Image 1 (cartoon, helix red, strand yellow):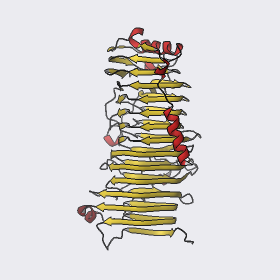
Image 2 (cartoon, rainbow, N blue to C red; image 1 turned 180 degrees about the vertical axis):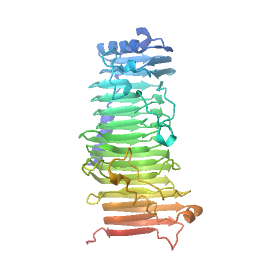
Image 3 (cartoon, one colour; image 1 turned 135 degrees about the horizontal axis):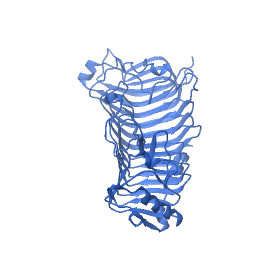
Image 4 (cartoon, rainbow, N blue to C red; image 1 turned 30 degrees about the vertical axis):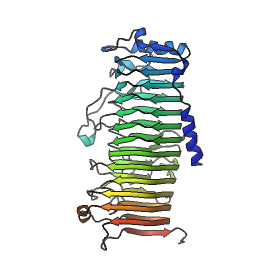
Length: 470
């Protein structure tokens, strides 16, 4: 089932073509854009977009220059094309995003978006130019900056669109989610660079929310929040997603599913990625009753940062309730293989009593510890604000191990090698693998260097091997 879904994602994404194939070209300067940054070019650029749409689609061309604008509404068949040397500077004036005007928008709460589309088909943003969100200041509690923010601008928000693409462009300094696709189908994001302030929260890179048939490939993302995060804000699935050959740096989670998880996540494949300087490398946060299933992470290198908060983990999966009356969801049929990890904190996988993680496999994991993090005040990640009381339960996060699994059914661990520096092991002698409350456990070839009789490589309590009955 997963293979069929994964292939479907690749095939559908391959049909996402640039609207420029329609043959029409509309130069924004011909419609009055000056490209000097001192003049707001929004009205002229929106006129070029509308002329392109009226002609049946084509390419809206930004030649080299500096274009100040915000609040652009795209239509079916339109390709925004940034030539080399072209930079769009995102307006920070809320009036450019007010509903009812030319190119009117779309504030999402107190957010506006440079590009907005609703119900459009065959829409793309391509080229070799730059989009600059103009937001470089630090913000967030961990950075000691907690002033209340006003109006914020993201780069793109597409709602209920089909056959959409972002290719080749570089995006800098977004002040909110950079690329947000909501209930979209056949989405391709390829060869895109996103570089936001690492010390500014709520600056996600790519957010496919309830989307189908998504391909993200060869992207480089640095963000003060999550780099690539799949969401289901409503009870609709996010499915048939491939992520490949990306380089990611995050002050939160580099690759994330959730926390918004009202719908299901299925048929997801992530491969050949490099994660650096990151709090959580891969995070599965299930809080709203959905199901995460048929998911594979393979050939991924993860290097966690030194803790700036109390929750650092290279791989994290968790089933919990967002609120006391929330439904517990399911995580099942998930495989991690060929992971190369460098971190001072360990992997943490935990289900909930009565709702275990099901049929999860870790295979061929290499884990290097150069400096051991202190677990005395370690918390489990929550991926957002804590709500229910059990989100503060750190009992499993603080167990002395570099790979902890709790509340699971059908868990397989094959070929785990944990290499710990001598000083790190002397400071924090920990097991390689720790299991609690696991039914159907398969463990093969777990190795820890250095070996030590005083601390076993494997620590199990209330665990039963596969085939063993109570």
